[in-house]
Picture 1 (cartoon, rainbow, N blue to C red):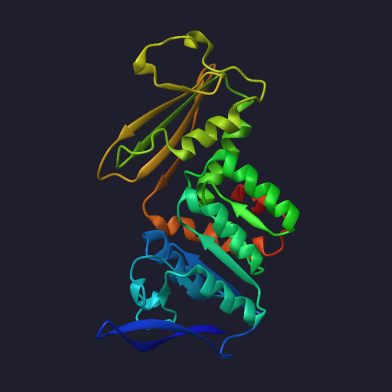
Picture 2: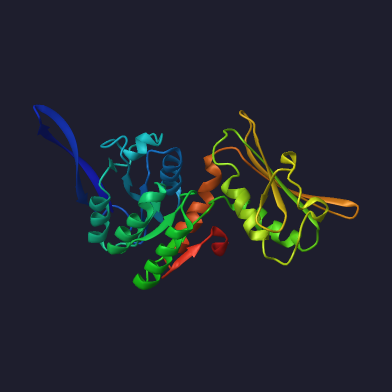
Length: 296
């Protein structure tokens, strides 16, 4: 197992805790070594807990600019420390795993501006990547795809890690061939990033399937009819309702019937089953895959 230990050093007259890297052989070498980049975020802490409890994998590194030097397990709310400190040096963490010659995956919860360099750096040390950064640009994804193809290195870029969200999207594609009208209604607790990534993805999936929706008022500019996404008449209505869970509903209608698909998210734990699936599958890839649905 790759573990990270503490060593005190003197810095400007005060004791400062500087993590030092050491290797031990306590855990199975067959375990996937997982590095969480963005470990101090809510989703990063949830990922540390989920990976620590999952079979066949272990937390081998935690990277963030917050809580540097503190134990990743304790920061994540675990009763016992993991003996893996949070570092702000990705290179140090990746280097320690590369020395162990173990199978490694970096889970990236950072920012769109850093994803490309993070994946390149992980590949240089022989680690595959799982990227969950919802605001990532299409240009970045294209550049990553070209890099991974050339480097023969696996990477999953996931617009969502929620299995329920993926299942809703797949069901919506199936339903779209049987109904003439479709409206997406979503509610979020905060007014940021609307329409949401989920709503945009659903609209993208239903676009260019040879269907034209909501023909009765497809050209209306009435703001009460919501925002049109794409060119096929798909409309989204975004509501901000603090105190309620995030919800995405897709309404289809045809002659004499309404068909409704709905998915609610109550907390970040809903992303963890998908994350574990992604970690187990991405180690087999030699290129970039877009979307968790490719692994389901």
